[in-house]
Picture 1 (cartoon, rainbow, N blue to C red):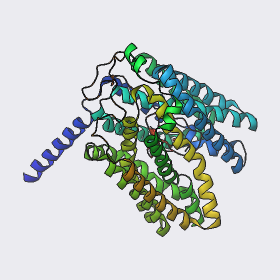
Picture 2: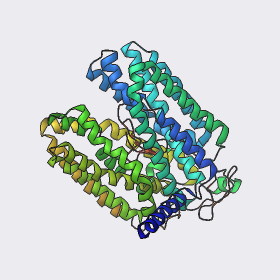
Picture 3: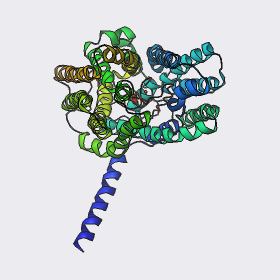
Length: 477
């Protein structure tokens, strides 16, 4: 009888915890969450693109790498432009343009046969898919109250990884039937996301009053670049992204050199997705109201040394154990860092600030393969993992210095901006928070998951992974 009572109490506690994790968020957020999940469920191209180019089309691995790089370059170039569009045109129009463009370009990519045409369209896919990230992150910041943002970012991040896990499993079956079906299926589901945005998500951009326009300086890209604290955080985000990118760049190469197969790598890295799906929500409940400075410091160190431990791995079990370590860091870092970016961004400049943050992950996706390749070829994989430990330490020290004097959660580092917001009910903690949502469509061409990220929403992926912290949170793959 006692055991039954304890079991019932435990079940009741789990139900209460689940209820508390999802309660209090606006209805529009859940339309965003649904759209994000649908988008990631259809992310077939990210999984099979490399196999499609090398096995089905017969191109070399070098050419497949070139296509992936061009996709990433497109994301880098579109980040800042999309941020400006988000502030000038609005979150909703930018999302719609990005999603429709992504759907069209992904479908077109499936019909390309000439190598030059494939590379060019892959570049367009990178531009289109990454353009949604600043708008998605800005819209999510608009619609969710400051005290709920870390929880909202975590839930969105969870949806990204759940969708990716399912789509990765399904991509193999789709590819056996038809690669073209994968391209067209992803394009169709991206259009579904655009329909959800069009029908269910009103514009959330705050409206500047005449007084604000007369008294406040306009936020331009130069304003972002002159914001020393924010640009330092962008730099630290780049360092952290370099670490997490090694999951899809350095890790498979190192395991291959140790004699493990691609299937062995898949088994080890699959632990990452499983842990995120299982632990993201309960861990978020634990960290939601804790000091973000301490969380970022600890997660940076754990990420760096989690990858550092890979130098001592000699079996699939040990590799999987190191994946467990840095995945815990990712679960903490992704929503915390995304929340910090929002707190550092002025309300009427959220698009430009999010664009700059997104670019840090996109640039990391370009630099990480070169960095890991040079280090492994010249010095060995052990030096790469040691470098990750150093980078994690540098990031932790940087967060410790930069976040001194950070206002309490919900405070604005750039000063409150009091003004009406289209269709919004201002929060008591942030007078510019409207109840309207965001979407994180991330459709990378590379066979990796980030930013998984990143980061969150938007998705946000490699190209910037939806996993590790990507603004897709997109954090990362």
